[in-house]
Amino acid sequence: MSSSQQAGGRVLVTGGAGFIGTTLARQLADAAEQWVVLDNLHPQVHPGSQPPADLPDSVDLRVGDVTSADDLDAVVADLRPDTVVHLAAETGTAQSLSESTRHGMVNVVGTTQLLDAFTRAGHVPGHFVLTSSRAVYGEGVWRNPDGTTFQPGLRTHAQLESGKWDHGDGAAHVPNTVAGTHPNPINVYGATKLAQEQILAAWTGSHDTRLSVLRLQNVYGPRQSLSNPYTGIVSLFSRLAREGQSIPLYEDGEITRDFVYIDDVVSALVAAIAHKPADHMRTVDVGSGVRTTIGDLAREVARYHSAPEPHVTGQYRDGDVRHASCTVEDTIRSLDWQPRVSLRDGVAGLQEWIATQLD
Image (cartoon, rainbow, N blue to C red; front, side, top):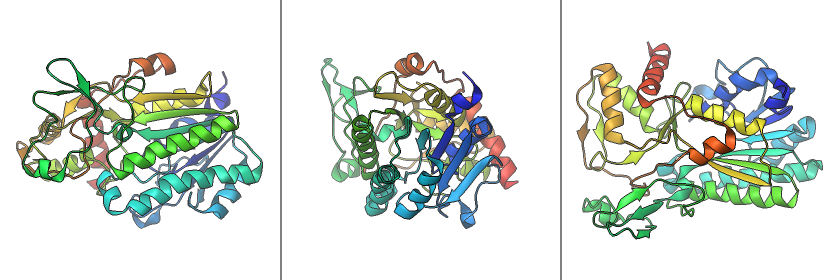
């Protein structure tokens, strides 16, 4: 397969000036026939609404918004892409509770506007690639000590106030899988990401084209926004430890996540772009396959900077899940892909990059 075929020929990347999009462009844009990015350069992600300095020169950046029919029509009619990588999204879990309309407009209406633009142009791309989220699973599946399983809903405010962090007595979380975990989002962000999946599945199925959905775990690494308060806890922990502060741990410090390094996420996207699904739709989980407590993450970041030991605060966030992780065996088989970066190496890589930005 030629490099241009691997890159998808003419490629449209929505939200492609962000963290994931910039890293993906550095790997594939030069090989594409055309690599067009539509991004509104929102100041929450891009200070001063400036594009990232390391976006490759081969990228054709169009400043525009996925909620604008005019912006989309101008790009779609001109490019008529073979492949669409749909990264544009609002991603703040907590923020989605206070700015639900913003998340609904960008994530849901932005997706439908994109599809309507293709309808108006009379063009159907050969392949859509969507970055979805582990948030679609909500709390996922839990197993009781007797072996029975259940899928809990949202932890109530009263439950969190009383410090009852887990679901049930002695119940344990089961890692999520596409095949085994029914999506059940418990916050607005997760609900909008699931809506994206369903909308794209319906449209692509009706137009006899292909869809790849990558449900990403907690992505971190170089080029992650350091100014966005909703960007993720790895960069937040890194800033605190660099300043010699003790990292605060919510709940009891035993919240678990699957932290996956940006290079592993991008390699999964490259594999998905290069190989269309054999049937209409392919959905895969993309993570490290390793469950990590936020306490262990904080201690790893603190160790790197010789910062004080992290401390438990008992604080919590409404709408947050207790545990989130996945297995990646099916993804390895489906995409011929492998996560390669350990948490220790990934944390070190992020700290080295942060030093180039702040020192």
